[in-house]
Image (tube, rainbow, N blue to C red; front, side, top):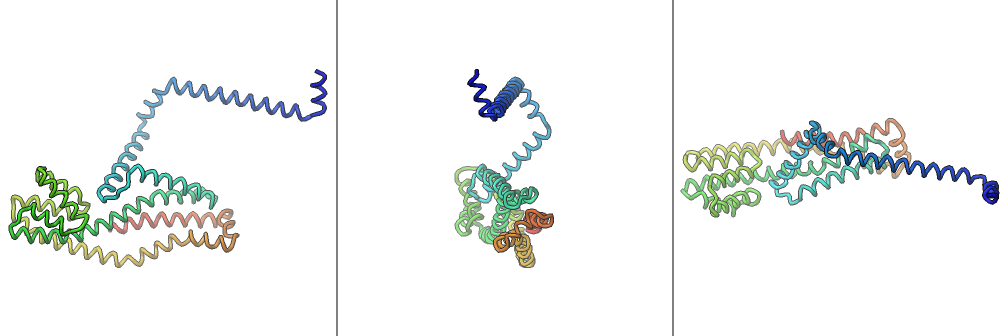
Length: 312
């Protein structure tokens, strides 16, 4: 006992350390006890929690929206022959979101800018798919012109539908050639003509493709529908010409908008290398934080507006 007293006297901080250890041990015991109690409560009422969550209208609505988005994305990727699994696509989008968020938070120390930065990276894959869809639709419409010409010409010569499909599938490239090749294969393997034509129509994203297939279907019983194909061809050619004209007219504006929206980010990186004070201005001043936030907002606005303009 005397040795302990003498040791404490020689080491006055010992009581302080022992008190800290005692507090740490006590807190560990309390936290462990609370965690165990929460776990036991959850385990005892787990089924009730699951039922309550599964019946919550907000949870059900969000789950339904997520399911629809996944199915729609998968359908779009299959229709455009994009050979990426939807699970991998979602993983890439979500990973991009979190990586961009933490990177933006570290670079700019601005929560709002980091969120906008992350949202941009999250919707970029969706934006790229929409660009690819537009390219495929334009290519499909241009190939449809040839397909309608082939079908109309050979129908007037009295050739059978299947033989015309075989001709179209060999003389026209993908995607239209592949669509008719698949339909031709279905017909010769015994699938009913109406079913094959219905599937062919579903493969087209454009109104003109679906209308073309509908006229083919009607021409089985009404040969006058062949003459309507010439009218469809004229409308399609006018549509393609108008689309090209609109694209040419807005090409310069789109490029300027793209450069204006993207310019602030590389400018900031370049200036921060030359002048380190730039980083201080962006991170610590009100106007700097506002500028970088508006920069990311402009990129997001460009992506949304560009999708809208391309549909006009």
